[in-house]
Length: 100
Image (cartoon, rainbow, N blue to C red; front, side):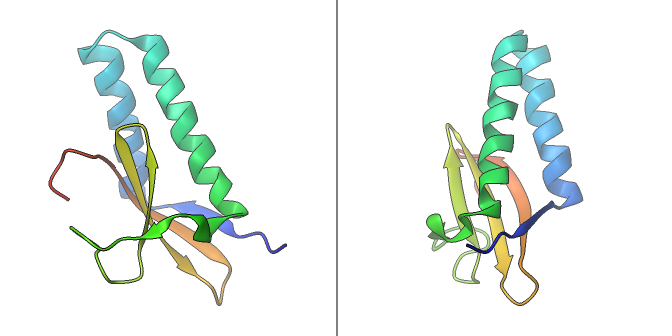
């Protein structure tokens, strides 16, 4: 089985940090923030082995352009696969109810 390299865009890094900070500081839920970030990271790293398991994105931003979406709780991870270089690039991580 081929393994892919997974990269996060600078935007995706910032968004994961912002998700953590919001849950920790605004909702006062340190443990919940840590657990959610761990689940997001686990899902992202799982793309090394199974990048095609998630559906192609057909609505909203990045729709019908070859991007895929992976859902983790109330968040969506949007990424693309570069088959020729064996790379998965995570573009953004967003709260589902945002208009993306």
